[in-house]
Image (cartoon, rainbow, N blue to C red; front, top):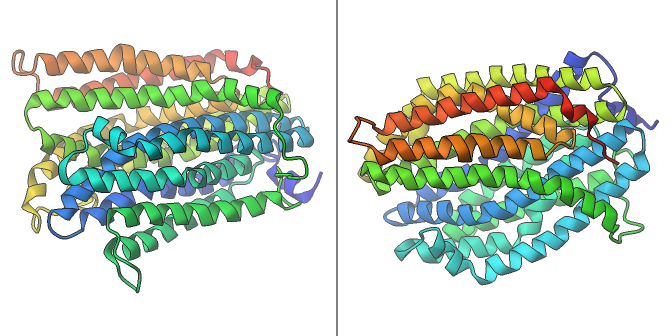
Length: 469
């Protein structure tokens, strides 16, 4: 076994210590990955005059369209981790390397298939999600730039997935932190036109993200082509192997659909809240509130990412008890982390919302959205420990290759429970005394039901029989 492969073997050493040392860099990396879109929002919102609110809406709405390719790419990432980590645990390194290459080939095809139509029909897609007036032109430009550079996002996340599957957490952290820090610098420079850079406003946010992701994706590709990498990208035979690609698709499609389910529920909630009468103010509030939720979720997903790789390698090596325990320990660590984030958000809700959204002291138009967002956040954080359970065990199941189970569970929780209950609360608002806070508590309580269901499934253990090659 080479030094890189020995270091990447997650079945070696005490389980708790191995999980902690492997997971902490992933938590940091995922936190910075979650900042990408938030950074764009923060810096664009500080454009002077009406360009700020219009730019904020443009970035928010164009990002909704760009969410679809990201979800599909995430499915390929999860499938790659499941297949590569399983083969790595079996010490079938040649097949692990071959699967890594096939994942990149699949993403090249998807980037062309998804990027071209979203570039050509950028205006129509933005109108579909509500862009109009002063928001439309910058939203179209933002989406077109992101669509043209879709491969940079795909490759950066796939590189980190390949590295994680091979037990390497340090380089994913470096790549994601470095890309985000460069994105901050480029956003400030290109949006506001400082330090000798042209002033591009909303388009500058898209270019900053594209360049930052692209440069660090190239660095990541270099890292995984070196002999020292536990899993290597070998380009001597760069042609498709359709059976491997088909396997990635079979595992990845349910994983992608899992996040589609969550996105549909998110869109439904946005539609329901208009019945409370705050209109644009509540939409602006939830644009910030849901992104803060996503930042917490991405950070907590670092423990899920660690669990996915450890479960995959454990099953590959036949160490089922170790794989099961890794899932439970990751849940405990994630619950502690997410509860801590929730406590910080609760205590400092107002300054956090003002920082990410806008300051009513200088921009009176942000006064009502800030109050509504603070109200939402102080209830939503009580659901963060439940989110920790579901996101960690969902990724652990994905790492085992059991991607249909999380899809089924999320469909039950979000589409059969959360959305109907939310509809009922908003439908009868004012008739039975329901208000916005009733809706926020529905989101928390259904999250608790979901956490209980995930724990029952993980305890049952059907996932340990999933066969992958």
